[in-house]
Image (cartoon, rainbow, N blue to C red; front, top):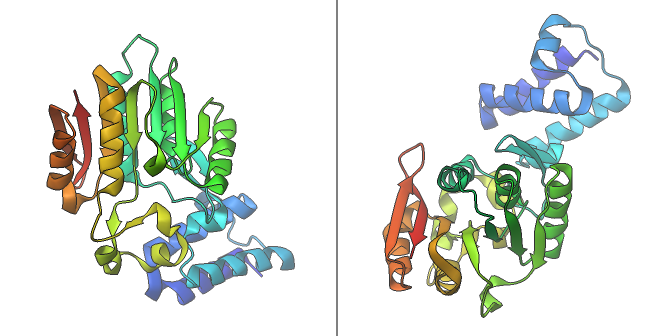
Amino acid sequence: MELKEIQGIFHKELDNQFGKEEVSSFFFMLTEHFFGVSRLTLALKTSIQLTKSEQSIIYDALSRLKANKPIQYIIGKTHFYGLDFKVNEHTLIPRPETEELVQWILDDYSKVDDKLSVLDIGTGTGCIAISLAKNLASAMVDAIDVDENTLKVAHQNAISNEVKVNFILQDILAVTDLKNYNIIVSNPPYVRDLEKEQMQQNVLDHEPEKALFVSDDNPLIFYEKIAKLAFTCLSDNSALYFEINEYLSDETKELCEACGFKKVTVKNDIFGKPRMIKAKM
């Protein structure tokens, strides 16, 4: 069967579910990943044939898309801050907003000559820690996560991106003290249970719940713990960075101030939503 015919089947089966443009994007992500066939290649060579085994691969991907499995899990990787990251069911898929958090840190520290120490709490794929290690040449980077399987993926990502990160299996809620750091950053779970109805089905069905959700009665549990720990181990020229729930920006700012931070800045993302905080002594 020609690949062009299968493209038509993708649109017939998925357009109502995702929209034509999204389906086109999915299709070419799959053909490039599995067969090395780009959008341009198919436009120039419209009669590309797939073998039976290749057809089986692409139809399996179609079935998983129909079941709302994220495309990143199907191809097993995603892009973040110009780097490739392996992802699987143990890891949250990195979001573009988190790239903005990384950029904020780099804007503040990329010209600092001193050797920096960095801690990423709840590292997941390692996207924040690895991106910082890649772009802050002299930085010593530690990264904590509570899940052993998640850390295995993060370690593989560090190797493939040729950076050194010290990964630590640890539950931050059980930590009583931290060593001194110049930068502490975290994108902890922050989606309240009451907000689940706003989430896309592919996220609810496939991404790890413990990396996303917190209870309605204590939604800032991770922020409070991390802010208290950070206040004891950051110096005057250091900073704590959070990705935050846009609906709880005021509460998160007040929490950081209650923990002792004197200068707390809320930053909007490119869509104008309050999604990041920086807290300094």
